[in-house]
Length: 305
Image 1 (cartoon, rainbow, N blue to C red):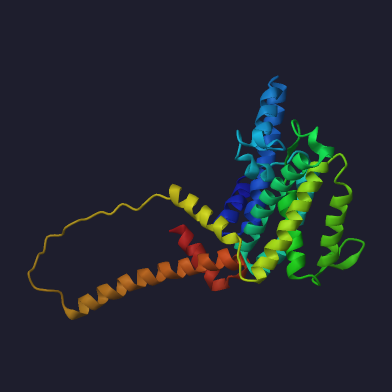
Image 2 (image 1 turned 180 degrees about the horizontal axis):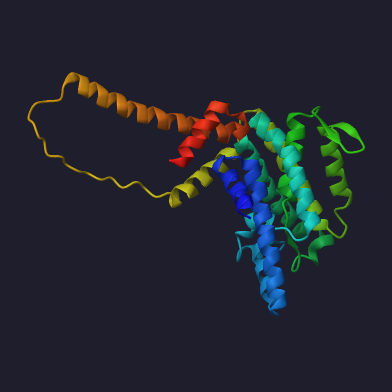
């Protein structure tokens, strides 16, 4: 158990966004699964239903006003082992392509905007098309599929001829995988999981438009990253400035050699911190695997201080 917790902590220490997204989804799934069992055994299953209700995205815009956070929480919440398993596998396979070629921040942008865009598209279609309007009062959405689809389509738009080895099929180009997944979602958009399939289509649209905009120099991930940095700063303790005075034992000024030594020592501390900051920036942009052996060692040493 301790080793599992250490692995989870390492995902956040190294700044690997792909692993962080997967860890958050898995932790939420495990927590809600355990809570479901405990509440059901204690005869309080209604409490679990109420909590799930507040985490899922409603199709009714009026209901969204009372739980606006659900536009975010819904794509970190899964019910069913196969549901989360396939989403996280697709996340890992295709997320690595964006993370390795474009950086961790771009991956985060596609996941978050894909989830938001897919959720809004689901609400739009359900409220505009007569076929779905009867289901609006009781329909809700959950799962990371929209964000994952945005990543798949974004990767295919960026590297359409990149080949992925699939079981029983061998190497298949990304453009065909993306097309097939979008086509399947479209033909199943009137089935039992109509809301989820429609959200996939919205996520696919975000993935395509987001990547074409990125290729033109418009990075949609920046507001997401800046917001997260701001939130982290709220919980980061500010260093206290302590002023102390030392009584001089001699009126004679320091020697030139002593002054040089002091400046050199301070410069060394600043340089060491600058190196750590540069390493963290590199992790944020390219991922932990992009670090050299020396950089990994420096980061490890710094984490022990």
